Amino acid sequence: AIQLTQSPSSLSAVVGDRVTITCRASQGIGSDLAWYQQKPGKAPKVLIFDASKLGGGVPLRFSGSGSGTDFTLTISSLQPEDFATYYCQQFKTYPLTFGGGTKVEIK
Amino acid sequence: QVQLQESGPRLVKPSETLSLTCTVSGGSVSSGNYYWSWIRQPPGKGLEWIGYIYYSGSTNYNPSLRSRVTISADTSKNQFSLRLTSVTAADTAVYYCAKEAMAVTGLFDSWGQGTLVTVSS
Image (cartoon, rainbow over all chains, first blue to last red; front, side):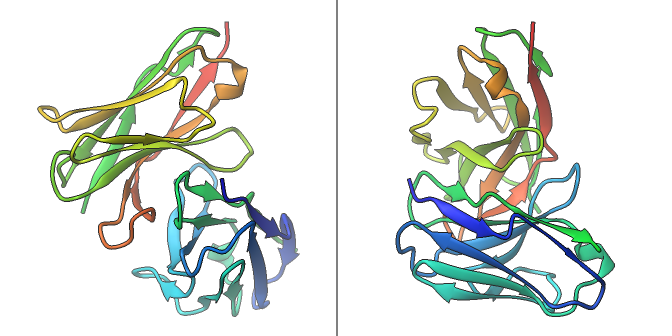
């Protein structure tokens, strides 16, 4: 199975900060990567797919980049509603796998 | 807009079988080229894909759980189900049912709200 390693596992930030989260795949996956946001007690929601395409209704402050094994999720200006846990997920091959998550907390 | 809702026992004893059902509305489990998946999340931990059933009835399971998992569908009720045998405390998790996007296989664009299943005697 393809392993996804996210870093950092958690971070503290203030409203307005630029936040960057990375995801590294154990083997090349092209652009077959998605990013999800999960809030406590809720199901994950798609933010980015195909590494850089914005999901429906997702604010423009979210962006994704990368291909192959290294990927990045960026929030250009953190908003109060963005405090959550973020997961990357590869859909290159089955079994589908997720990163360990990055919790974005209020500083 | 497809909606999914999990149901089933919230407490299962060790060594017994966990059974959950996902009821689908706004879409059909037997048409549309969709993959219908189960995903779980232990408390405070990350997400694990369990497996899917395709609209045709074919299935695919995570090798880590393959020996214990069965996913099936009841097209008359527009539901699909998960059976996980010989459970232990490590199977305690929130279980989600989800639909993969038609245009992007493997991308989950619709999720149920999730149901916490606890394995305990």
